[in-house]
Length: 307
Image 1 (spheres, one colour):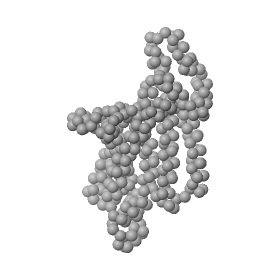
Image 2: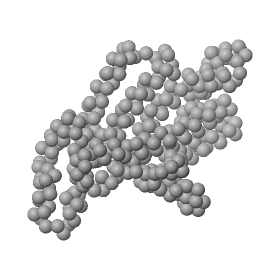
Image 3: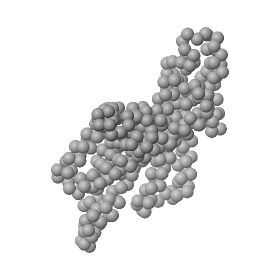
């Protein structure tokens, strides 16, 4: 397994290089001048030129790109154009909030999806199965940018149960976590149902029932464990989707995470900060996929990584 982990970690290098290069050129091609945003359009040309030279924005784009790669190789993400603070410091200050929201949304999705998916599979074509699939379709169809404001209007403004925005206690976390986790819960429910249906008619399931085991033991110990491989794969992939989806959810609920930081950096044309945020999200996605692959061997001992 160790050689496998090393190979996977080595693949992180070209992924980071490719993502950083795309982000660098895309951001620099976006219309708008960060110097004018900082000084205003009425600023003197001499002041603009001086600030542009101070920030290194007067150099050719290829030279800026070369310097960016050199700093990245040294582990230096640069400094924010607006706050002049190290980019890494700004990201580390916001990243825990995003992880808190993402894991809360993931827990909500798994808690809903696994039991509902199993019950739908064991009662195929019943009202429970049809109802759960309808709700799953409904959950997939409701985007975050619509569901979040609806939750705020209903539960925060009309009922007053939860705060409208911000980060504080657990009550601040409920609405954004549900908003972010609903779509994932719907997708996981459908995948869990499909995976359990594939294994529930296998010979070893009939053997377990013939031995007189309780139905709950047969389903959750034998059927579900063998059905979890595609579900775990989907959870790993959806974790990256949750990180990207957190950009919208954090903006709606004013959640002080890396997603909201990315939007603020884009609006201010803060090139180093945007690049740093996207790199951290991409690296998180790669590491989560690696962790997902390693969990496979715990769920299914037949999976090995020697080759």
